[in-house]
Image (tube, rainbow, N blue to C red):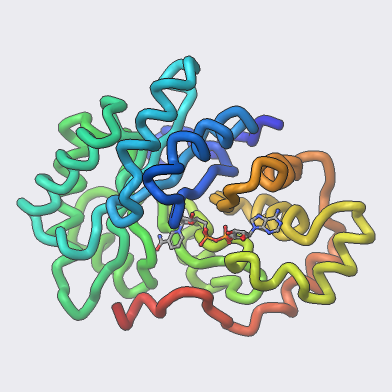
Length: 272
Ligand code: NAD
C-alpha cells in the first residue's frame, strides 16, 4: 500500500501516512526503520529528543531507495529555542541525519512560558530561505501561538503536529488550520494504543472487517489529517498501512465524533 500524498501550503508533498520513531532506542532504530521502509513507509517522523536521528538517516541511506522518495521530519528540542541556538540545533540535526536537505523541520513545543517561539520561528524561516529545509512547521501549538506567528512573521507554518485521536479530536484547532492553510498532523494517532479496546471501535472494526487501529487511521485519513503511527512490530507496521481499501459511512463517523472527551495521552502544551 502506498499512502496518498498531501500537498502542503508551499506545494511540497508529504505522504498522508508516515512512521513515528518516538521511543525507538538508537541501538534498534536502524533495524526498525529499515523494516518500516520495507513495509512501505516513506515518511519518517523523528526529533532531536528521540536520540535516533543518525539511525533514521542511516536506514534511509542504506535502503537503496532514492532519497527523493522519502520525507523525513525532525524537530527542534525545547532547550534550543532562540534564533542562534535554533540555527545551531538544526545544523546538528541535519548532520546527524546525513540526508542533505531536511524535508520538514518543526518546533517541538511552543513553551509559551519561555515566550521565544516567535524568534525561534524566524530562524526556521531563515533555514527555509537558505534551502536547508523543504518545509517548516510547528508542533503542539494552540490557536493563540499560531495567531502570533501569523501576525508577527512572514511564513505560515506548513504543518502543526498535535496530539489527535478520537478521544481528542481538536475540532476548533483543525478549523483554524483549514482556514489558514496549515496541514494537521496527528501524533499519538492511536492514542498510544490505549483506546483500541474501546467498544465503539471494536464494534465498528468488526463491521468493516478491520482492526480498531485501522479504523482509527481511516478516520484520520477521512479528516484530511496526516498520521504517523508507531509500532516496532512488522505485522502491525503493515496493518497500519493497509487502510486504503475502505471508507467509513456517515453514521459511523457520527458515532466516532461522540468519542471526543478531551482525554490526552501526553502533556498539555500550555504547561510545558
Ligand atoms: P501511537 O498512537 O502511534 O501509538 C503507538 C502504540 O500503539 C505502539 O507503541 C503500540 O503499542 C500500539 N500500536 C500501534 N499499532 C498498533 C496496532 N496496529 N495494533 C495494536 N497496537 C498498536 O503513539 P506515539 O508513538 O506516541 O505517536 C506516534 C508518533 O508521533 C511518535 O512515534 C512520534 O514520532 C510522534 N510524536 C510526537 C509528539 C510531539 O510532541 N510532536 C509526541 C508524541 C509522539
